[in-house]
Length: 45
Image (tube, rainbow, N blue to C red; front, side, top):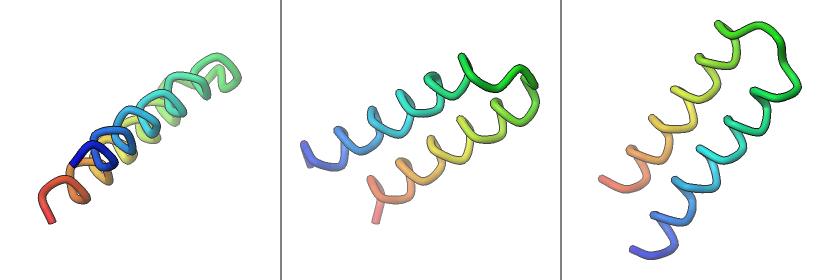
């Protein structure tokens, strides 16, 4: 379970890191939501 929580935090951190490099907020928001959804999927399954 610790690995899954770590993966969720890693994906969220990567999304926030890309926020610094991508000026379009919509594509960044979509990427962050995708990472969070993937983390949630991995956490539940």
